Length: 402
Ligand code: GLU
Ligand code: MG
Image 1 (cartoon, rainbow, N blue to C red):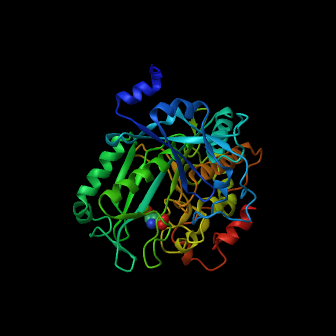
Image 2: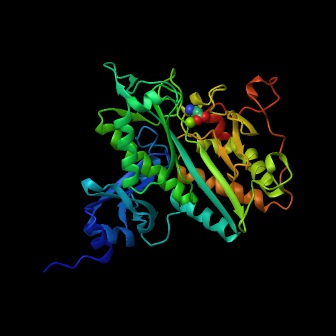
Image 3: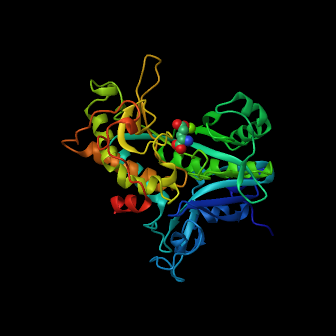
């Protein structure tokens, strides 16, 4: 006698879903996965699937760091799928995707879980009446490996070029189709400055939605690029002579329904609360860099003059400022802030968890930190010592973080 399928599984089966890939992102920024059959999905939501804590001791190359405190053979966790965030991955092939969070066997949340941290910070902000909206921009290189393995640009055409769009139109069509089939809201797509580099801006959502969408979108782009026989690289610096890939993070903040980054008398339309948020983020940028730019190679990208914004300054519409304020204007668009230094090696849950903590701190100060004046133009052109450089290596960023 067969057991009748549970209602959720039945609804998914009706959509042709057969398997669910459940992901989480480890401290090295790698999305890790376990796949369950549809019949096991309800249990994966309620109880979870086994995952050794050692996976947070993986280095960026995927190997276990023997010196890490989690490099142990014992202990186990349960990765629970978040049913509310379940979405199609490749529906025609029967695949769905869900982000997961790890729990102890006792049923309490695992204290080191990155998505749980992001959720906790989100709930704390919400309790204080603060609504933070976030969205990532992804940049990536589409490459076909040459005989010696070096990545060669796969799609010809100029920077921002309509010629590149047309050269790669089948790729673009397949990508936008896949995003829409997966229910991923996006705002803009374009050929980027670097050879065979592309960019996609995802629509804003809550911090959890923004991080989930980034993970989901990267999987889609990777899958799709392989279908064309190419490789995609989200590396901050796919090779030293190529333009880097950013993972810029856009943010807006409201408190009690009032937008905080506009409507004030200060520079760029900031009021005291908005200025306090910027000042807190600016002060903590060197420490945040360890999460926003977490690989040694991240610091090869962070060179002046490459719009990767390696200076600890803010600016109004300044693309060389680590914090770029895009003010509200007569066109009616609301103000927002861009954390331009971030790259796609970042664990988006850790980065957004930390950013939310800093925003909460900036708003909680009875006397907020003073916001230094904004910087216009290229900070690299100012006399040396005028504006601070952000950490120039992972070691420096780690020290600031500690
Ligand atoms: N590719 C640049 C980066 O590494 C960003 C270019 C842009 O402003 O979009 O961040
Ligand atoms: Mg860009």
